[in-house]
Image (cartoon, rainbow, N blue to C red; front, side):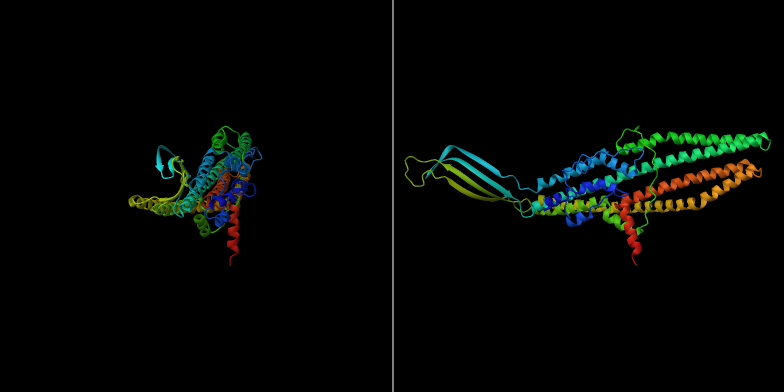
Length: 473
């Protein structure tokens, strides 16, 4: 049953794993439908190769100036060696199924009588025997089910590694975008200060401004220019961080990201916590291990029951010259039935206790992981809500007011109604607000990706769940 279920999923599972990113915002994919139909089925056919996932030949996407985040995620899924190692672990686990679910090899025995044994009908010359061992009822099925649970756990660990890799890529991608915006904003403010400097120099020539004002503006310009050089120097390490996740040389060029995601997670905390319990791949892997050890305990109990061996022996008998019996030289056929005797009960009882202890240990690890992941989800939700609040605050209130204040300060300064320090303070405040909203937008996108990674649910599904929740009376 498990092997047939395994083949049913062969055509679609791995294709969905990676290619879902081409049709939606997030390439995360789950297998709830398959899991409900085949609760013990391995998630996909291990004969599918890791590179390309769909047919083994699809090349990675081209990461040029037009590449989007989805292209980077797909590239990482196809090229990252750590993820491929997890895939191979899963593949190895799948290959255990036919090894544990097949009957033991039949045994053929040939015997030659070195000294002929005389019988009434003639001497025994050769003996041929064939036997087959049959384990106790249910042993093979239980071993197959336990191997399937182990393979399922390996798949969930592969899925957890994939989601963690995608978060790593998106975080590096978002930080690279923030670096670009910081460079642009700082450069724009340098140009603005240079305009201020020209105004101050004009006023200085007509004795409307003192030399200290020129010195102060040059100090401010020098500070911003130093910050700009530092930001530009950061591009190489930021690029190397992204390339490391993509399994590319650290110096490989990466185009500036055009934007980060603006989508928000608006589903309730209760539904997200429920999704975490049901869909998080780390928890699912531990649940599969719990079920595996439960089955192993049953296997250990059945090991205490005997296995049966059925055999057939054929003895070749030679003819006796001095005998005229009708049965002279007739060969002999012998049917056999044997059982092993599991009388050493201590080792079987110890095997049961071992499996129970392993199941309890796995349950404890799952409980600890559930508490830790719930805490991490709460932190991610706070970071997302806080970033969303900051985006709205800077966009709708602080930046418009700071821009208006700068324009008013510049007008007053040009008319000689305010000094240079007021103008610089206003300009510095606007610069910090502009950087702060970019930081908030990046934090919002990264925390949303972190929520996806924790609950194991694509953002599109979260949006659908939020819509259904809002329509519930």
